[in-house]
Length: 590
Image (cartoon, rainbow, N blue to C red):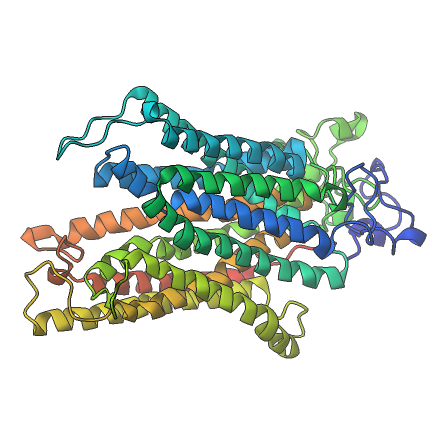
């Protein structure tokens, strides 16, 4: 879309200074991208030679190999900690949860470095190297007898030494730093390969997010089946070596297409810019806002004063923040463009307004992540169902494969069937808006919990009929009844999780895209913590007065169904709040 700088002749605000022109001349506009991206040598990126699907195939290959490496470690980590490092159930589970939480929190580190200083490409390069070293460290730790405690003798298991624990956890937390550092950058770097000022490329960008998520699930599915089987049957050395090799392939795939990529320049620290707006607005809290918004401070030209960022149009919400862009008499006398702590551009103020607008939407997706953190409760439910299918015994955790398969099927249906149908009705190039897409996913997450509750109701009914209430045994009801809840969960993910990534990328200011991608990922951590708090509260409140509670060790005595109904109820209230936020949300104007 046209920027405000194009629409208004002359300077915006008194004493506006010109921004350096980095866009090609209008006669060459069809040859070059319109979003300010450059090629690897820093020249304006051409449409024909850079970006688009040809560059994205390498990025998708990188993501698939990286996720295979990550899940190759994460899926079976609790088993390794128990068998090889002799940790108890509680300690091992706590270590896994802490590590997974760290993997998502470190996304903020990678995002801030990418947006502020290094750019996405070099951030991915640095953190994937750290990642690879961490994986190599784990493989070495599993292969050298000196780095492992001696085997258990009967029930006596020797404690690992400081060196043995230190080597393993150093490698493990290098992986957490590596995966966190690259995770918010890979999706936004892939989306950067499409020029969002071009309607044709914008549609492809929406499709990219779908196939990006598809690749994540291919990697997760392969590790959850093949690599876990290898670790259990062929040993941990080869089980850790395979993810290490795949990470090396991921790095090779990423670098091999360097000449094809489009790059967005880093725009300086987004956190500093946000603080500057708040400080400048408070300094001028007593000054009246001008009635004409064009008197607020902005630079000339199409580009903003922030490196690699287009201008944002002024909006009338959160007017207090506009005070940061008032040119006071003091500013007019001095070279006011030199001190952003006293005077900010309209674009800089609008960046903060966008973050404030996005916050309620961000907060409502936390409950969605809390529902997804119930996977361990699904596994516990599976443990008290009949696991025999023919001559096979199905491990309860292996039903996650249905979640992955459901995600992959739904992505194909969404991309190839639903979007063209929705496009006819809504007239939108992407079929649904990102907020509509996320809302559908939130409805499906309620259906997931209702499905789990109905299975549990039936299971408890059979337990009562068979007289198994006080026996901690599986009831004669097939574990395959859990398949629908895993499939609904997969469908919910396709709508909400992908819609969320697309929303945070599309609505983020140009120079804050990695940071906003990281904020979307942080909801996973916050959702997990919230889920733990809910479980703790439920356990405390339902065991008052000597009752067994909803989730006792013997689930036949409990009421797990009530817990699922509670989560469905919380999700329903959250959906109503989300609809209110989504209806009031104003999309950004570039």
